[in-house]
Length: 118
Length: 111
Image 1 (cartoon, chains in turn orange, blue):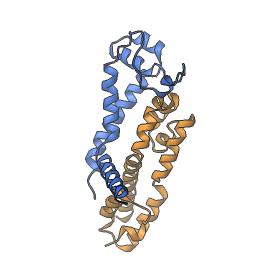
Image 2 (cartoon, rainbow over the protein chains, first blue to last red; image 1 turned 135 degrees about the vertical axis):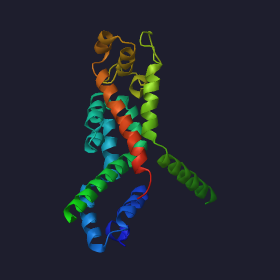
Image 3 (cartoon, rainbow over the protein chains, first blue to last red; image 1 turned 90 degrees about the horizontal axis):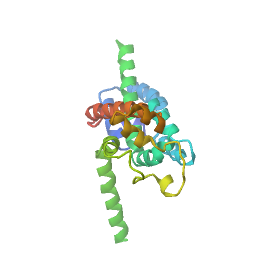
Image 4 (cartoon, chains in turn cyan, red; image 1 turned 180 degrees about the vertical axis):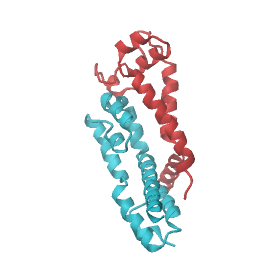
C-alpha cells in the first residue's frame, strides 16, 4: 500500500493517477526502488516545452528526438517544424507527449523489476 | 474578483477538454486530409505558413505539402523535384498515427 506522493511528489495530473495505479500494490521497499529508477528515466514536461520553444529560433524538433521519435525529429528539423505549424501544435500538447513517453518508461521499469524478482 | 474566477474556471474546463482529446492524432489525420485537397498544379495557393505570410520567399519546408500531394497523384518525378522528403514524411506520419492509435488504448485508462 504505497502512496505515490510520498515517493514521487513531483508528479502531477494524469501521470500522478497512472503511477498511483501502478504503485498501489507495492510494499514500501519496492515502491522506493521503483520511484528511484522511474525518476531517473522520466522526462519532465517542462523540458519538452523548452526544447519545443527552441523550435522558434531555428532548431525545431529537438523534443521529438528526446522522446525517441527520431523520424519525426528529422522531419521537424529539416522543415523548420513543418513551417512552425508542427511546433505550435506541440506547444499545445507538450504534456501529453511527455505523458506518453513516461508511461512507456514506467512499464519498462515495472517489467525489469518483475524480471529481477522471479 | 468575480471575473477572474470566471476566467479561471473557463481555462480549467478548456485544459480538461484538451487533455481528453488526442490533439496530435487529430492534427496528423487532418494534415493528411488537407494534403489530399491541395491542387499542386495551380499557380498560387492558399497557405497557413506564418513565414510565407510574413513575406519570406524561402524556408526548408517550402513545397513539402505540394510534393506530398504530387506523390498521391503518382507524379514521382515532379514530387522529388518539388521536395525530396515527401516519401519520408508520409512514412513517418503514417507510422506516428498508428502508434498514437495504439497508445490511445493503453495510456488513457488509469492503472
